[in-house]
Image (cartoon, rainbow, N blue to C red; front, top):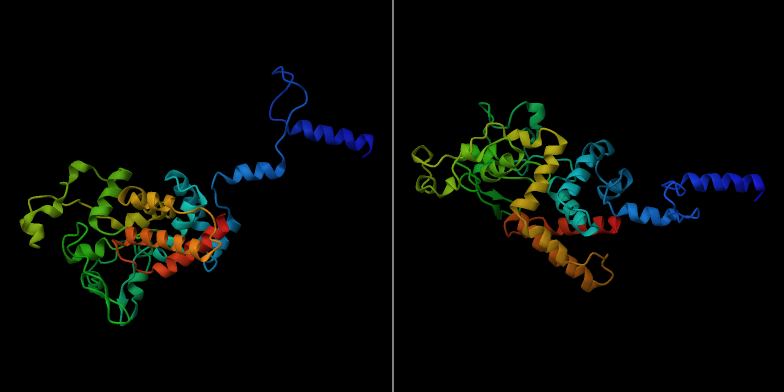
Length: 308
C-alpha cells in the first residue's frame, strides 16, 4: 500500500467512526464494527427484505409480494413476530390461509370448484359480497363438504356471533389469517377504533333468543358492522387483522410456537417435533381441526430454512 493509499484508507476509517473521539475525550484509536458482525446484528431486527420474501413465497408474483411486504414487516414488528421461528409459523400458516398472499377473502365452492363470484375482490366490487340482491351465497350458511364427501366445516350462520344466514356470508373469512365471524370482526373493529364497546352488548350470542335462532326477539344487541369489507380494504388491514387474530384472539399461538426449537431440523426426531408444534398452531387457528396441516407444515419448514 502506498502512502497515498494509506492516507485514503485512514480517511475512510475515520469517516466510519460514529462519534468525535477528541470532543468526547476518548482515545483516538477506536473499535469499528466488522462488516460481517454489523450484518449479523442488523439481521436481528427481523425485517424481511425483497429477496427473502421471494424465497419464502416462491409461487407468488413479485408485484403481489411487494404489495404486502412492508405491511408484513410492520405487523410482525408490531405484534413481536421477530424471531425466525415465530416468523416461519406466521408465514407458513398464512401460506394456506391466504394462498401465499393471493387470496384475502374466503371463497365459496360451486360444483366442486371455487365460485368465481366469491373471488372478485370486494374492493373492486365496491361493497361486501352479499350486500346486493342476487349475491346471496348459500355456501357459507350450509355445511362444507370436500371432494371425498366429508364435512370439514359447518354452517357459519349461528356461530362466532353471526346472526343468521346473511351474517354467515357477510363475515366470511377475511385477511391474512381469514378472520371470521361477527364476534371476531367486532373485537378487531374495537381494537382499531372503528367501533365502541358501548355500541353493542357483550356476549350477545348468549341471549336465549339467539340460541333459539330468533334474532327479532333478542334483547342483547349484536355489534353493528355495515362495512365488513373494511378488513381487506388495503394491504395493511389485511395483514394487521391477521396479526391481531394470532395475538389477541388466539394468544396461545405464540406460547405454542416458542416451545419449539428455533433450529432447522437435522434429524427425523427434530422434524417430527416441529410438525407437532405446527399441528398445535394449526388447531389453535382452525378451532381444534387440522385442516390443511400438511401444507402448513411444509410451508413453515420451508420458511424456517430461509429465515435461519
